Image (cartoon, rainbow, N blue to C red; front, side):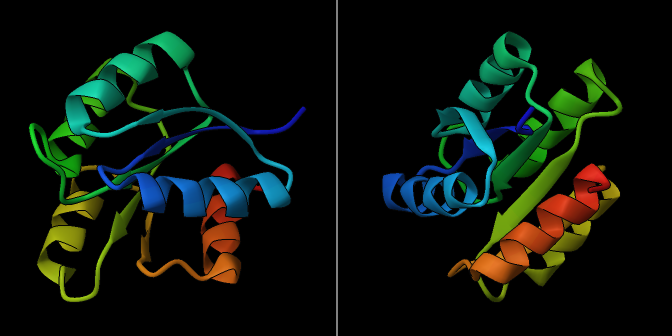
Length: 121
């Protein structure tokens, strides 16, 4: 059975890019969210195996959403996505429980490597 992944990013283009990478590599994208609040609702509803979470989003950012999801399920697997130059936020995210991070623009090999490592594949 394919691993089920939730994609969270406020940019539709970025969600499309990561969905494309995941689909071509045998992962099942079970849902998408465009901000942290939506991510929490989708997580409760879908219970994905893994979440890719953008750090900078309107309404609720990725780190706040990560903390809420970890409260709901301490074993939740979240990989943060960040643009270059957000190292301080990436450190905050790892301390809040993120398993890994990938940098935009996405490189297919790095995305798959981070997901496989996080899922223990």
